[in-house]
Length: 410
Ligand code: HGY
Ligand code: MN
Ligand code: MN
Image 1 (cartoon, rainbow, N blue to C red):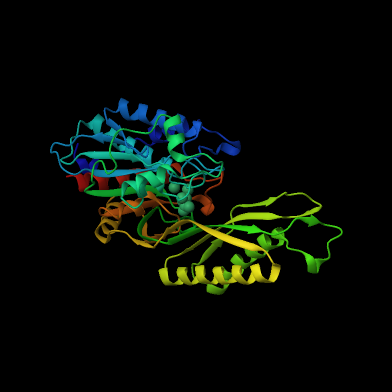
Image 2 (tube, helix red, strand yellow):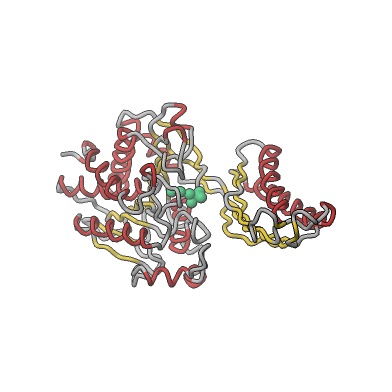
């Protein structure tokens, strides 16, 4: 069969997605496989088993990135695809998993057809893409691309107080392969959109041309605990009030900046977190994103000014700690065009788009031409067990991925 006529087996892909979703199950069919947890280990073990069944040469590098390599007829820099299989605490079953499993299904299709590619194909599973347990997000691919020294990454401490290097050793994925294994010829990642655009417009394929900048901070507030009943309002140094004020400021900031600016207070904890005690301390996170670097910097500066004023007016001490900072990324134009052309050749509607979420592809873009293929998320829901993509769209995305990989590997 001619390479351009090859198609993946949608049933097999759905079965693999369901089998991986059996690991770290939560209510409503979702998944919780926080990076480097026992659930993440179980998911890694299962995917490595599938890689070996497909005859891939499996290597694990020093930050736990997994690479399944299918040799080519020539020993050239490989074409790489992949994504992540770690999830947020209330994750769905497609975020990340689709990109890895569609890559494996593509290999299975090539094996069944007995088709060799000129360039090797590598399916990657990057460590800690979500950043939900260890910040920053996309940590594994960031180290791989040379954006973060391995030692610093291994010394990162999780929100539950664990050192990343220790957890990596504990789950048996502190690999022997050097960082930077397989310098790719190109990298293409299939991912659900996680936003509403494709679903609203009823378009099947997104050819992603850029990805917005990300600014993550932890904000720690030290006030003074006191009696909720006896302390006059004018004498309070209320860390709980300050946390709430920052949360509402972030919403206001996004509205005032407008455009695509997004601001989120995703995590907040108070101490001692009791009904009749004015909170002594608060810790919260601020996630700011924008496609325009200058506007994102402006948003950060306005937040910093607000925090300084709040500390003065409330008589509290506020410290910030940067958790992640990535500038907006432009993907490879030729690759985006190729994705559109393949989508059209396969008869799928398509459109250019921006990624609102961070992805491993944005780190690979630092070292090779990189691109992304999106498929619709029903009602734009993600990071939520209700995350859903229609099987026909999963299959369409996996077929576009396979054909793009074949063209790049020819
Ligand atoms: O935060 C993100 O954009 C990604 O899900 N890690
Ligand atoms: Mn993802
Ligand atoms: Mn995610």
